[in-house]
Image 1: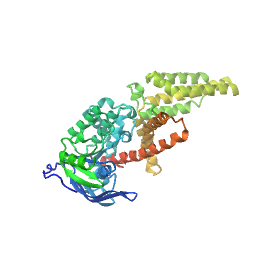
Image 2: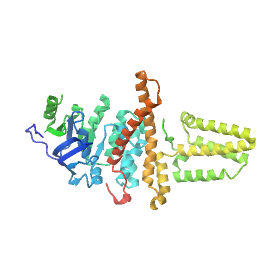
Image 3: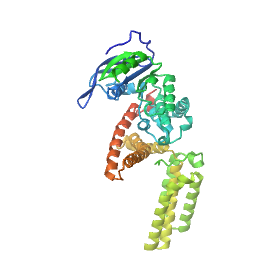
Image 4: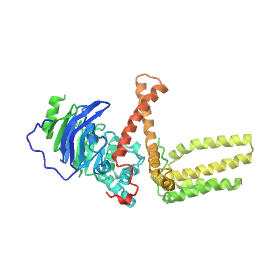
Length: 240
Length: 209
C-alpha cells in the first residue's frame, strides 16, 4: 500500500474500529485480496476501484459475510471469525441491490425482522420501526408491499432496515449504482447525515465529497489510502 | 402479483387477534361438515359472505382472488348435479363456499407477519420437542411471499429481453437464465439475512441492543 498524501488523516471517532491484518481472500483458487493491512476508524470512508478489484470482498470482510483465508479482521477487537454475531450487531450492511436485501413482503415487517434478530423486546419493535421510517421520510411506506416500491424507495427501506438496528457503523456496497439522479442524491444525503460511521464501496465518485478518507483497491491490494481528492486523482491516473 | 392477500383496514375483523380468527375458522371447518341441511349451509355461506364484505376488500383485489375459486365451485356444483343429485350438489356448493369465504375473510384481514407469528406460537410445542424450527419455517414462508412476485418480474424481464432479440417463447431458453438469476439472488438474499444477525436469540429478553 502506498500512502499518497502527507496530510494527516482525521481524528478517529467513537464508531467501531476495524483492524485488518495481513488479510488474504481467495475464491476457487483465485486470490481476490492479498496483504491487506489497514485500520479504519474515521466517520466516512470511501472504497473505490475497478470492477473485480476486490472492493465488494473488502466490504464483506467488515461484518463477517466473508472470512479471510489468511490474516484477521477485527471490529472493536472482536474477530469476525469468532464473534460474528457481535460484529454484525455493531456493523450493518447495505447491499447494492435492495431487491435482494428486503426479505419480508411488507415494509414494516422487514424492519421488524432485524430487531427480532437482535432480541429487542416485542413491545418496543413498532415504535423503533416507526421512528426509523420517519427518520428517512418514508413513514407512509410502512404498510406497503416491498416489491411494489420504486428503486429509490427500496434503497431507503433497505437503509432504514439496517439503521433501525442502531449499528455503530454501516458498510455500503455500491448503494447508488442502480438509482437515478434524484434517488442518488437522496441516498447521498442520507449517508452524509446519518450518525453511525460509514464505509462506502462505490463507483460514484461524487459521493466521496466530504469523506474523511478514501481507499483505492487495485488488483487485490490497497494501492492508495488518502483524502478523497488525492485518492480519486490516483484512481483516475492509474485505473482508467 | 402478490401472494400476500392482506388488505389494510381497521374493521372489527382486522382488529381480532389471529388466534381467534383461526380458531373460529377451524371450528367452522368442522361444523360445516356436521350438517347436510341446505338451509343451514346456505345461511352459513351468507354469513361468510357478509364477513367478507365487512373486511371491505377492494373490488379488483376481490375479483382477482375469488374468480378462480368461483369457477372451481361452479365446476364442482355441475359435476355433483350430473353425477349425484341436486341436494348433494347444493350441500357441497354452500359448504365449500362458506369455507372459502371464511378463509378469504381471515387472510384478507390478517397481516402475513401476524399470521406467521401465530403459526410460530402454534408450532412452539414441536420446537420444544426438537421436531421443528418455527422461526426458520416462518422465515421460509415469508421469503416465498416476498420473492414469488420478484421471480415473476425476472421472468418478464428475460422474456422481454429475448423478444427484443427476436427469440420466440422457448421454455428452455426462458427457464435456464431464470434459474441462474434466481440462484444468484438466493446467495445474496442469504447474505442479507445473515448480515441482519439471523437467527434470533432463543431467549430474546436476555439479549439487549
